[in-house]
Length: 399
Image (cartoon, rainbow, N blue to C red; front, side):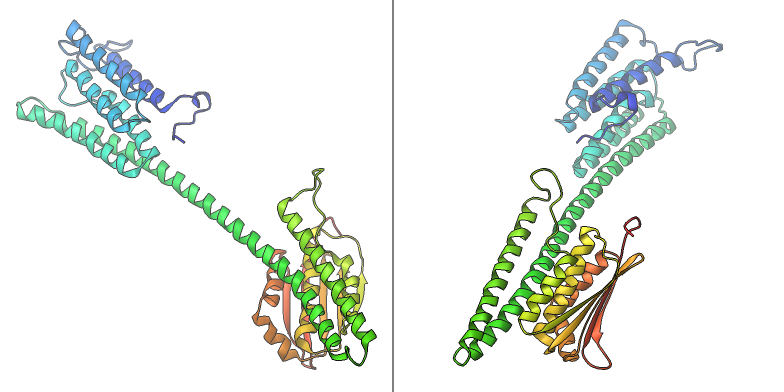
């Protein structure tokens, strides 16, 4: 999008329009300083011999026509447009009988140079700057070659404004490029965060169910010949866990396809603390007893806290089933004041459970808690076993 000045009343002026306005302002200023204004004894600058003659006016008209044409081509053909504007500034200077191209005749070029530099590419802006300075040097050099008077100091001031115009335009180009890069990085980070969230959900959802299925399938394989009834019950549990996992995956995929329900309402979270009892019952049926203790209040919490708390408990219980070799574990959910505390403790092989943290389980739990500005800890207990604790702050107003 073209970079243009953004004055409130002139936002709709195109870059070419700004160039024309600058030319008109320069022409008006040139006329005023050659006219005796109120309070002055004489004009500030003496008018050239041909300034108001037919030949001088012809030069001015031709220069204005070139500026109008160049302004229309400023965005589509910037190099050609700049050449027309520079030619116009030189022609407009001829009737003035001065030793340099005045700043007033170069204002339109400065505006055009800003537009070219601000809308890139950068190489084009640099070429435009070099060309503009070259015209100034060429004008002064030509007068020196003919032995005419030269306004070197005034021309240096014009060259300085030209460089400043390019610097401002280049700064606008760099700022826009930086903003686009920041937006691209933010979009990329959002995609990465979403992928990590999906990975955590998939891991937490599937790992527990697969652990229970593996435990039940192993039990069924061991007693299939000696206790057919027990093997049948184990396989029924495998079927139930499989169906629950598939249902959870369907819910997850549905949530990924639409963040809102068909009526515009937010979708229900995939899991919540209310599902802890069912989790405990399923794990107990698989052979590892899970005791759940509730403390404090049991008011509903925000969906993100409910889901993260459940996933921490689910992953902790999964590690107990798969790695700890424990017969039981205890889950404590303490909801008091402005925080939710979770603790999962077992009396199994603490070192084995700690080694399991080399995968994604403990890392995923730690990420979930960190996203909610909470605290997470996991490690072997001195008396044996393994402990996982998490503290999740509850927002003010939900207490």
